[in-house]
Length: 291
Image (cartoon, rainbow, N blue to C red; front, side, top):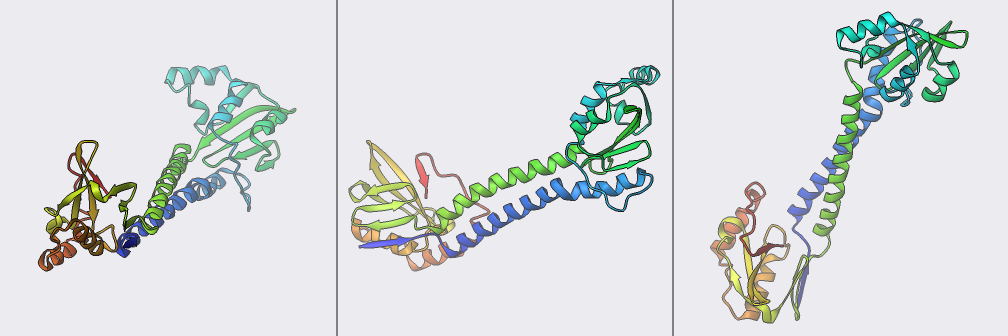
């Protein structure tokens, strides 16, 4: 005797739908974080540029950390620094979008080493554009003499990073669901002469003591009781998860010489309750295991 099966078609469909949803949403968030939000910010940057370029691209190196590093290497107009300290915004004043005079600036080579090549050069102005911000440096005699840095109010650097983290989280969830999908698709329940294999559990015939069908009519599952290590244990046999559920139960009952709990009325009720159990599932009783 051997009965081998995987999960039910309904369970496979629901798991595959959830798996596809995870990866579709991960792709959506990844697109927004990597391309969608930055491209949208380019329209905002173009409004501040003069002349307005027809083609504009962004460079991920133009970000808060790199710009803060560059500004930290410059000596700004003392009056501006003093005003910033008095306003309590000294940590962010250089992101305000205002033109700030520089007493001692870095060279153009220093800028390109950190930020890459400028998106546009017009007269003395060198524009660097990132996913969430722009920086304009006025350069004279190969030194920065003024700067203007601003972050998009629509899609900030934090917003963009949030989209990337969501994409990563959903990708990891999708990977977990992918493993779950394989366990649903591949045969996971086998009843043979050695006993029952359900999921990761293997139960020999001489360990089995009976079936508890108390939850079958309402929940659609039956618990197989067995003795191991001096303790009574249980493993759940779920009609929603096992494709050949009735054959498995009938086979166990025949081998244990016990009456089948699958009376016609109870079986009909059990199948009718299957559609609702995904919304009303309970944790296994203490000492029981779910298959």
